[in-house]
Length: 373
Image (tube, rainbow, N blue to C red; front, side, top):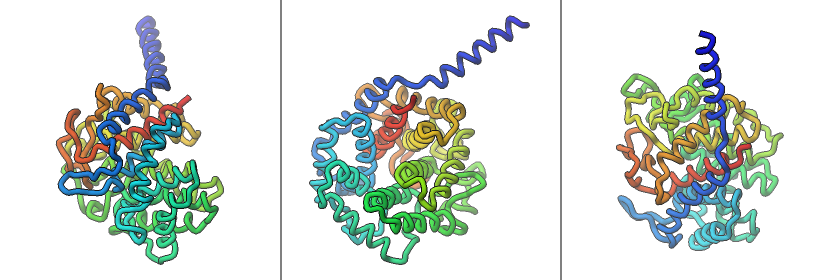
C-alpha cells in the first residue's frame, strides 16, 4: 500500500510539473510565424476587398483584429516585413475607417487600434487624424449606448484607452467608462453582465428569459472572449491610478474565475459556455482570447500562477497541436455570427467565412504565452 501511495504521489508531482511547463519561446514564435505567414501569403494585397456573402473593404473589424494580433507579434519579434504590411494597409485606406469619421459603430473603429500603434512607432499625424476625429466626436456627444453588443467593447474600448494615454487626456477614459458601464448595467433588461455567473450575454436578444437548450443562460464563447481581451488590453494601457481601474480589474477577475471550471477536457472551450450540448466541440477564437487574457494576468502578477497557468497552457497546447496545421491554416474557427449555432459545424479543415480574425486572436494569445517565464 505504501509503495502504491509513493508511486501515486510521484505521478501526481510529475503530472503537476508537466502541466505547468512553459512552452519553449522559440517554438511558440515559430507557431505564430507559421500561422501568420499562411495568411500573408494568401493576402499579399492589403487593399483587396473581402468577398463572402457580399463584398467588404479590408479595413472592417475582422481585418482590424488580425492587425491587432500582427502588432502583438511585431512587439515580441520586430520584423520589418510585419511593420511594412501593417503600414501598407493603413496607407491603402488613407488611415480611414469604413463609414468615415462620423461613425458610431465600434466595428468601424477597430482599425484605429493599429493606426495608433503605428503612430507610436512613427508619429506621422495623418496616421491618427481620422480615428482621433471620430473618437473626439463620441467624447463630445452625450450618447453612451453605442455598445449594444459585447463584441463592440473590444473593438472600441482600447481605442479610447490608447488615445487617453497618448494625449494625457482623462476625457477619453471617462467616456470609455460611461459607455462600458451602460453596456454592463443597462443594455437589455438589467445590463449584459451577469455578476452571479461572471459572464456576459452577447446582446439584449440573449439575456433572460432566453435560454439554451439545456435551460442554462446563453453565454457565447467568442463574445465573452472579446470582453476578456478588451479588459486585459485596457488594464495594460491605462495608468495605475486611473479612476475606474478597479472596476475593470474586478470584472476581469470575475470572468477569469468563471472560465476555469467550464474548460473542456481537451483544453478548448465550447462555443456555448454553459451548454456543451448546443453545438459543443473545439472552438479556437474564444479559446485564444481566453488564453490571451489569462496569460496576460499571469505575466503581470494579477492572476495566481499556480491556478491559471495549467488551464491556460492546456488551452494553448490544444490550439498549437490540434488547430494549427502544417500549412499554417488554423482549424476549429467558428465563422462570424452572434451565438453558438452560427457558422456551424466547426471542424479542423473547414475554412471560416473570414480567416483573419481567428488568426488575430491566435497571435494575441501567442504573444502573451511567449512572455511567460
